[in-house]
Image (cartoon, rainbow, N blue to C red; front, side):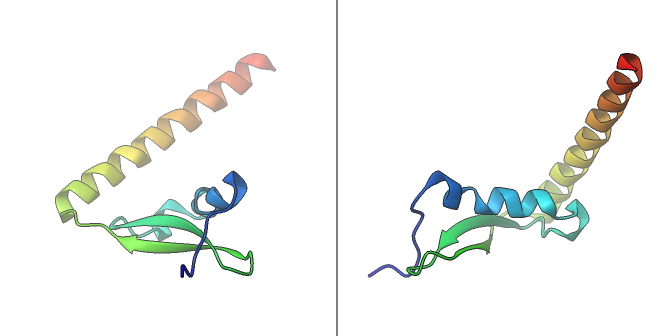
Length: 83
C-alpha cells in the first residue's frame, strides 16, 4: 500500500509551482521539494533533506541569486527597448 501517488503531470508539478511562488530566501537550501498526491487526490508538497555540505549549498544559492538578478536585468532592458 502506498500513501502517496503522482497520478498526472499536473500533480507532479505541484512542487515546482509551490517553489516558484516562494521567496528564494525562505527556502531551505538543504532540501529538495517533492510533489505528492494523497489517495484522496489532494496534491501537496513535501521537502526532503539532501546530503550536501554547507559550502556547496551556499555557493549554489549565491550563483542562483546572481542568475536571477542578471535575468531580471536583461528582461528589464528588453522591455525598455520594445517601448
